[in-house]
Image 1: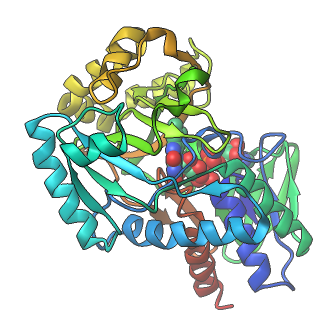
Image 2: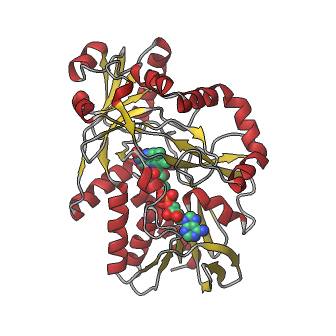
Length: 394
Ligand SMILES: Cc1cc2nc3c(=O)[nH]c(=O)nc-3n(C[C@H](O)[C@H](O)[C@H](O)COP(=O)(O)OP(=O)(O)OC[C@H]3O[C@@H](n4cnc5c(N)ncnc54)[C@H](O)[C@@H]3O)c2cc1C
């Protein structure tokens, strides 16, 4: 049994059913439709793998995920394109960080070029910068469309998806897992949870996840005014601070033809509250009660204040974008739905940068699957299938 019809749960369910057609696999989702949380609220960028620590699961799965995502889109006629991406340095500090990122691209085996100011200006006249890294393979797609298609494949192979089924309690026994889903008590031989923003809560019921917590980070977007959407030909990203897991406010050429601006990264006061002012006493008090949150705040209070400032002040938000795209003004920023990232933070206040999985002999939990997990969903699913096979000796 699998919990969560986001792209990670959908990918794993489909690949598991494909590998084991004789098994009866049930996928439970608490919402009425798939991809309602992170999967349906992402930037829609098919990442190439620029940022990730060489040798990490992220580096490995992202590279494989780019190819697998494109192959999936081709096979199932899902619109995608590889418009490429520029990471633009706007000052000396960022030029230094850009050089380090270029080394990382090389170590991760990514197709890239370093462009000087002249070449950058020739290719993207609206973008101001001292130089840039060009990654031609980066793409764009609707991950919600991919997620839906994976679930259709899963159902066509004999799998069952049940919506409006919230798993609230689980207990691992010697040879089964007992759980409460909606008003039903269900017993299963194996439980895999891919629960995104709720993942630590399910893992904690088994005594796992004691040393980290999901901290929800809200990502606020704008949509660029239609008349400005032709200003850029590629995704435009800033050079990020390497200590932070977020890549900075960027301009994304979306697959529907629009351009999104964002996301920023501010602490969310509710894990699944998208419209401001969303507040959940349970979610917020759990964040405040976690010592790792205070250690994290101590380390990154400056960055947090900057994010908060640009969250409440549209002009401050715009100024961050104008550093590399000075042609934009306030009237160009139109409303666009926000997303919330599930980011695991350890007790010592450090971010869990890599993907993280944990479980017992009859359970497996996806504990940390932030960006680029949508890009990486097919290799992550493949990996999870082999972990479950090992545990069950299939
Ligand atoms: C703002 C933003 C921008 C992003 N941009 C990108 C990008 O451009 N490229 C990229 O590769 N990645 C991006 N990501 C990351 C990517 O979206 C996520 O890593 C990925 O979608 C995670 O998928 P998931 O299936 O693990 O989680 P989710 O999509 O959150 O799915 C989890 C599912 O589990 C269900 N669930 C939870 N608890 C229960 C329960 N108790 N019972 C039943 N069901 C339950 C939820 O309802 C949900 O449907 C972005 C994320 C955000 C938020």
